[in-house]
Length: 109
Length: 130
Image (cartoon, rainbow over all chains, first blue to last red; front, top):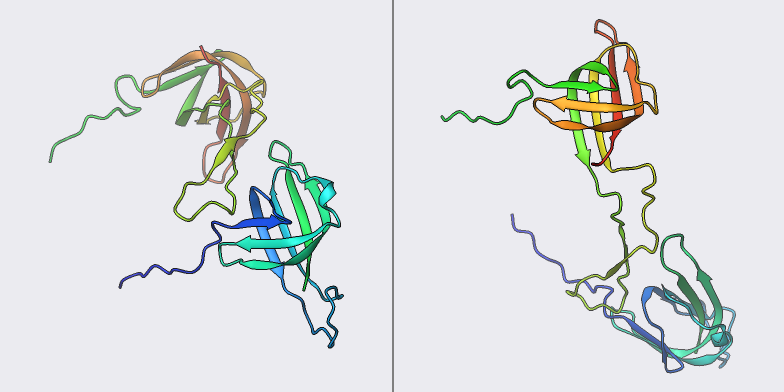
């Protein structure tokens, strides 16, 4: 019996920029597109807007909060390019470990 | 088929253990040495690393607590019904299959009574480094 290697997309080589600024040392990245429909409204912000949540080593300045910019994710099958707004920034210290940041973006359409 | 001549605990006069002036009838011994200053590392691999490349890591910022721990220990089982007092310190001499000549401190000891068997004890000693 031969075992065949699979070639599914791996979560490697992923980069993210927001408003032209690169977010480094990402350790996790998830995004979800909007749910539901626009109800026929041509608007950018809806209650069902999607979001993107990232975490990484290091820190992010709180000045990013409420900033709008182009969110571009490339690589690892995570490609995304849309307008977004930063809605949450948090940091977590780990005992005898590394400090990590987490940022949430709402995806505008 | 050729005979091998590896060391056994029964060679010569056999293997004996003496700790803090008492001799123990041992049925097994394990002598281990560990580097207590070695610290594990934090995996710092990130999503931007390209497939096929190496993971990255860095040492944890805090070192392991070495106070009271030499990293050398001797665990042994013996026939007897008296546990060794925790914290008891004394000369440790093992000769025969293993050789140890140092001082040690008992960190753990217990005895077990089992049906149709002699009472057996076990102990762990923290062995001082020279």
